[in-house]
Image (cartoon, rainbow, N blue to C red; front, side, top):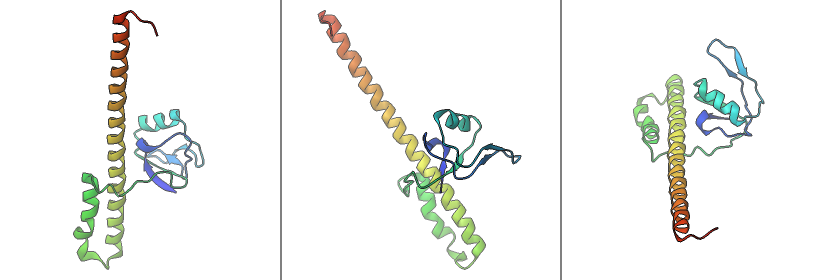
Length: 139
């Protein structure tokens, strides 16, 4: 079972826990297989995270992002509370939150880079097609 940002959800993943609204009404049942439409619906409902079966994503440590740096700093910030079980839990919640944010930030950067590469490739193809048209040649 893995909690992931909805931005990283992919079709074919299955919910390990139901998705509920703030009033407790279940919107999506446990075990439901995600599709592109369901993921888009979750985004439109402003759902930030879901719990899926297994560990489909390597969230990594995200140490190269600002969120990853915040996660690393937690040990220093909570150094005086090593024996306090409640502060240990608070630190764990913060660490999970920062790691999820770091993973989402990394995924957005990769998606942006991929979109730029695809735009450059399509521009190159358009230039090539234009050069062929100028010479009067057919494909």
